[in-house]
Length: 90
Image: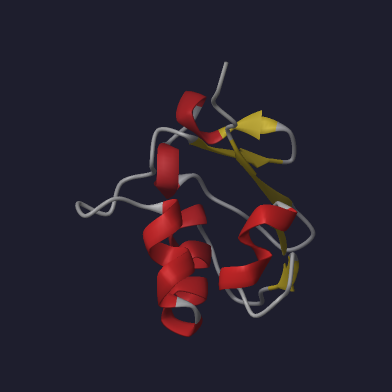
């Protein structure tokens, strides 16, 4: 399973934007895996309750996880998790 981050988050993810994660079965497990290694990244993706931050959009093979099971959306080998951080401004 591959997880892709936007470039803006690379600075808190060891300079990386792509991760191959083996053995994870949900988006939550993938985020837990990354948060263990990069705690600041974990806080940028999830709030203090462990929920997906509202300005972070996550897709599994193109499907918005908010329209599925949120962080509990299942993932399997070969799938891709794409994280997109919303940009605000005027």
